[in-house]
Length: 199
Image (cartoon, rainbow, N blue to C red; front, side, top):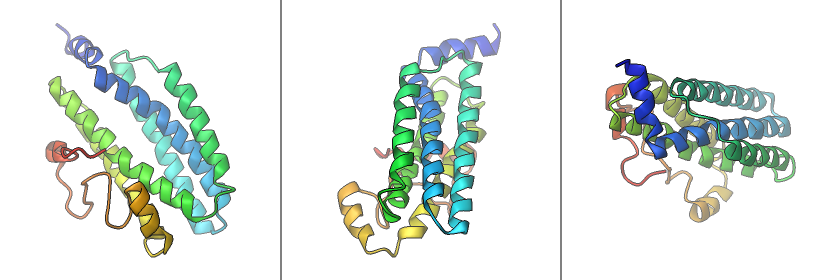
């Protein structure tokens, strides 16, 4: 039997994986919309360019996720598309009215949680005996971690951070993932990430 057909059958029967791919596909667009507003709201040109690049990264991730979905005939979720379209546009607009700190903080917290989504996808694929997507999922997870590091580095010395960290559980001392960019696992060992109840 053709291996691709076999993989399609298995993935379609993995509800958590299908749902996670559908959600990630739509959420990446929401993040891209949010960064459009974020970039538009900051005055510093270097910050604006960096945020614009992060937006591009999110569009690239959306393209990679749909490519994987198409391999296994996974449909786009209309519910997630509408939901995250609205969320992304609301966040984009809010960046112009909530000041400088909060867009950086919540972008960093969001990216921190997104890291584990891609390593969870890898884990779910492994449950089906599929390792084809290891490299791209690893690269997207690491890229989200790089985004998190960018945002935390912008606000790590701000007085408000300790307050927000105590309320929202992310900041200098707390992350929603256990990835260390200075001590990365190789691709074939990266399923070790996000095993301890992390996002």
